[in-house]
Image (cartoon, rainbow, N blue to C red; front, top):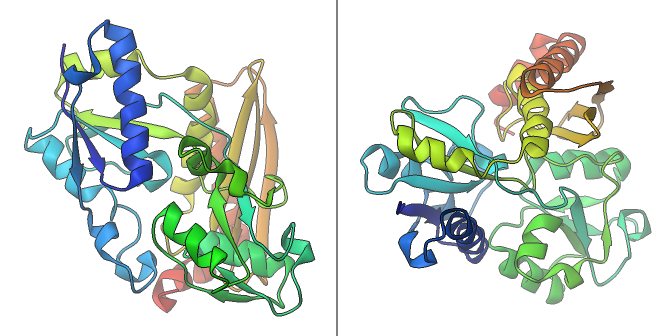
Length: 313
């Protein structure tokens, strides 16, 4: 069975899509040529002068691929899971989570080994509202500036000394063979990653039974369960790129450990919950995430949650 795959055109996205093509080739015994990859420039790729939350947030990196799937120009889209909205577009399903690298953030700097070692008033570049809020929560003295672009572009800007430090997902660095650029790794309990970070996602048409059945064979239960908790947490908080939300689930021997938090964009306020779940399934993990998200939402208050969108952070 052959499949036409779709991907964003960035070096990281294409590397991830080639990984999926390789998995499909090994699963089916076919040549990788049977799983060609078509690249797309997405709405998110076209925005280079401002934060994504100012242009609509989640879905900006998936819209064009979803349209191509629904139009049958491609059979499946390969995504970074953290880019997927919690509510999928009509006719599109999340068919598989075939891989997850280490979900932690990497600290990138030529001037310090970690965030605590940065000089007072140092400049940290990031386009992530989560990373901004978490950084300011720990170091309110630092200055945050917007840094967007590919992994390679951001590494170059740090190398040029345009800013003192940034963060990148370790998973992306690893897949590109660039993990040696990390000055250090961020403690995932001190600064949990974005929900779904490090995981790949494959989407397809809801009514394409043959493709769904094939892709389902690539999915890894350990990652599905952990991510179900993270996306349940995100769903309960109506998470978008306008909301600084972090969540991480880890599954070991059937036991799910989960931490999730929401912060004010300036880092001054933080609400956090941790919990463990024995004999976790996708359903029970998602319910745990939703429960903890609802608890935090109640504590933070609807006025605060709604203000995040109204302020246009």
